[in-house]
Image (cartoon, rainbow, N blue to C red; front, side):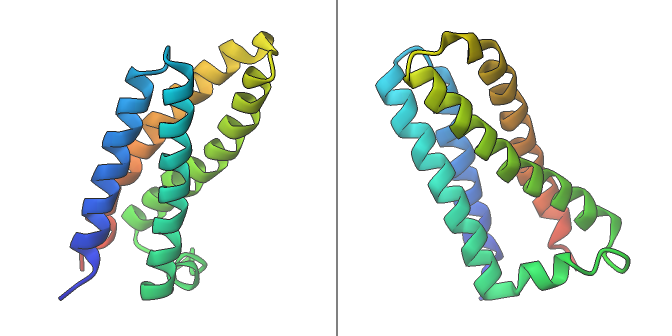
Length: 128
């Protein structure tokens, strides 16, 4: 059996949890716990994909990769970069620096869009 369905199910669950976290953003403690879980689980999913498919090696062959895989990689790598920015701005918010709230909000919506696009493009990126 292919590992693709297992990865897709995890990806859908991660995105669903992320949407729940956005919905509960005004409940600070719950929001932080959910989003921390989302980021950790998503990074673990990347490691799973790497160990089963050598994803980094395939991704490094930029010139020979199909266009859809390139698009998928753009959103997937962008999501990880955005996660880092979200953690940094979120920690500042938690420490009381409310001046970062507008940036955190914009980064948050961008991260959600990137994660949705990562899921959508993953269906075509793994197709033979």
